[in-house]
Image (cartoon, rainbow over all chains, first blue to last red; front, side, top):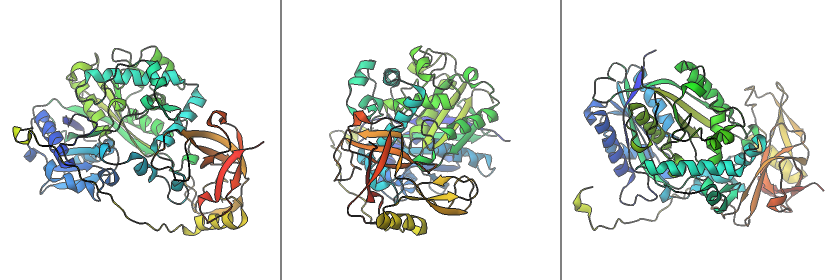
Length: 381
Length: 155
């Protein structure tokens, strides 16, 4: 199979309220940062994939509204609705199709402009479920309870994810919410939806991220060192909550297994050097780690306590601060991708980890992680 | 950003998307809701291939990808598989519900999948995974999921 590489990344600072920028203004900033990073001009881009959600944007056909700012005029532009990791997947497929050489992928969101509870409530089945009034937070609270019950993971262990990631955020200037906190601060923060405290939840955020994916024939033509996509997969579980085992994420286990196989990874615990996972809530980092085989079942909390997932640990997880420190929905997977790409290139700045040859990027779509996308990125082709 | 925008206070516009929808419930959900409303019975569809009883009822079995389904009645009683408690009055919570609101994932006896619904008649502290609950029907039933008022603990 032909190969593809990420040759440029650009991200706006993640902020609580970007009142001086429209969606297109954010895209303009992220796209230009990615072009500069790659050493390209907009004329070097031959197609564009934008990632957005009409409900978060408050407009229909939202993907087309950032095309001008993304330099898509007279180019082939297409869209993905969901996490940015899925946009990157589609962007990669386009360069592998033989029809394109360089895809610019963007993802944007402004959580500050709308009401998350109403938008995520509308993801529930309109006939059987929606009128009960659940939303993403209460859905994930239900999953957290289920995970804690099965694995005996404690509230303290979950809180430690928040302590770690908010602490890491001090080293990442793009992050929204660096916090110097202790486990007790998390446990004493407002109980929002049992068992989730305020500091178990990611904040409301605005931001836009862009990545440039190139076919191998042009990947080394520009100034930036390419980071190679070695493996990728996404899988989805059943839509209805009650059809799934909420305490697990079977679709993630499956997606990871396929991505590892494609990348030739036999022992992910040893071979993955750095990971950025979808930590929208504290328990998710632990659950996702276990499902991806990066920690044995029901052990992630204990390994976290031993410091294994710290920046200087065995497997640094969310060294960028993760989504707990800034969660631009939709753009999130591309921010994670940008962070891992920079780790592998050795230019992650303050949150650079020691060894970063092989990295893992994870994106999520759907309530309580119905669908998962896993990328394995590598320094070597 | 260049200096030309210095001293400019960005403006904010209030707006909303307001589009009414009519959800055609389809044959399967319609039958489920009519039975719920008129007979106070909870019914599900059973796959003729794998034998799984699906609640909410579906026209097709997602595992077997077949529409070889038959209707079966399931029990009013079941087991709580998980639950969530809203402490903040989230915007999606219906106006007639006051926090704390408790939702349960309830596997009714005779069903292989679980149903989302309210747990009520107990304090959040008293809910536990594995507890037994039973359906309480609404007095005025209109053919919606809220024809079940909530699930309460089995004494």
